[in-house]
Image (cartoon, rainbow, N blue to C red; front, side):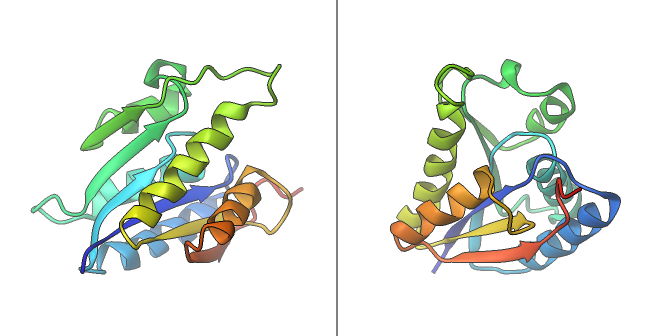
Amino acid sequence: MSVVVSITGHRNVTVEDTRTIRLAMTTLLANESVRAICFGGARGTDTEALKAALELRGQDRTPKLVVIVPNRVSDQPAQARVWIAKADQVIELGNPITVSDGFKSYDIRNRYLVEAARRADGFVVAFWNKKPSGTKNCIDYAGTVGVPVEEVYIDGDAS
């Protein structure tokens, strides 16, 4: 059985968080049942997890690395775009990122990530500090549709 795993997490990460993310990605990449990993394309966790996966996966280029962005790649932070360009596939959802709607495009992207895992009997890996955030919203949505979530604690944007 092969599964899809989706990554979610905080935008701000510490050096120690980066090490934690890399270690978790090493474990995930060693799981032969994982055929694809989906990332949200933002700075922080998304970029660090994608970077680790690109650097650590084997010569056979498995699992497939897919980046799903809320609108277009050109709207993503510059430091994220460098790594997004190296992914195996990029999906642009085409939802403008706006303040006026409370950044609804991020929620749509997060639901897309959860649904990608759900359709493939997969799971979500959430890197977070257990504080209210978009990551928490993603975890909550996964719970409502029955997608398992593996939580990995990081400091994130804790002050």
